Length: 489
Image (cartoon, helix red, strand yellow):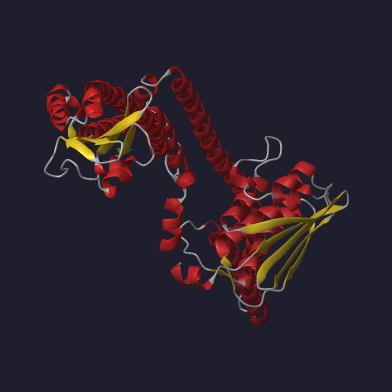
């Protein structure tokens, strides 16, 4: 689980927009800064090398013009004097040493005679830096520039000038410029990333408000966005929030009306059941009153007493069973419990008066022997509504069939009527998952809607096995609750 969370956090597609946009700005700024800094440093390097070339050429031009007569005469002291005077004149070049050699390669004079004495051959290690015959050779690693100029008199080479210059100040300037660019670009990147972060947070604040209200709506009643919040938004989000509030009001009103319709349908169902129950109670009551009259008149006769008591007992038992079945279905404080065979058989007593009133034959087949681990109350309510709908759909002198059984551990109940069949849109409504959140339509009544809502609550399935002009078979299938959920309940 922790590994999945880490992988999810490393996935850029899961990062919030308020982080991705500033990060993109920072990356782009870094790329632009790298390109610009590289161009600036390249131009600076080229400019420094050009300036060094020009300064070195000026130094060598002036020095060679002064040295050619002296070198041609091999006048060591005049050469040394010329080198000594040029040191002050070209301070900006930072010359470390300069040597002048004759045509044989021997040193005539040097600005540092202690290390480069006259009339000695120049060391090969010293001359190795000038091997490529370039006028100026740079060694950035040692912060050194090597200058070399041949001395020619009347188209004849008479010697050479070798010089070493310190270019540390130029390299330091490059480093200073690089650090300045780095710090400046870093500060600009951080500044723009911060500004981008704050700007994006401000821009997506309405989106967060909308997301919050949608999350709240998924957990219960939809809350409207306060009017003060709506008026503070830009025109686009103000229009979006206003439409969301209109939609929320419509959904809340529809939910309120749905609850009212459900209550009205429940009252109507209770009214139909009550009229049938009154008829069922009046029949045994009439027999019981007749038994009482017989006892009053002929109570002394043993046969009359036995028969009358038996009639009274049967009548009271019938009334007791009818009342018990009604309480089992409509008692509000029931705790969840498993469905038993008696729970379904009690429905027969409740539906029987309605079937008699409609002139229908009720065929009952209950094959449930043991308790099934499904919630008893909502299953009873769903089956009761299916039976009442079947009675309402069947023609007079027809029949309504009930068949309950257990298949592969699941409760299966078939309710069959002899009506004209279900329309296609009603069949699609019953078999579609999650369709019970709203009523089917205004003309279809609420019985099927209530059944559909109850099935959604208990994770049941409604299957239209048959739908034709000769009748309809609707199957209710409910899987048992897992053991851990039953224990939790």
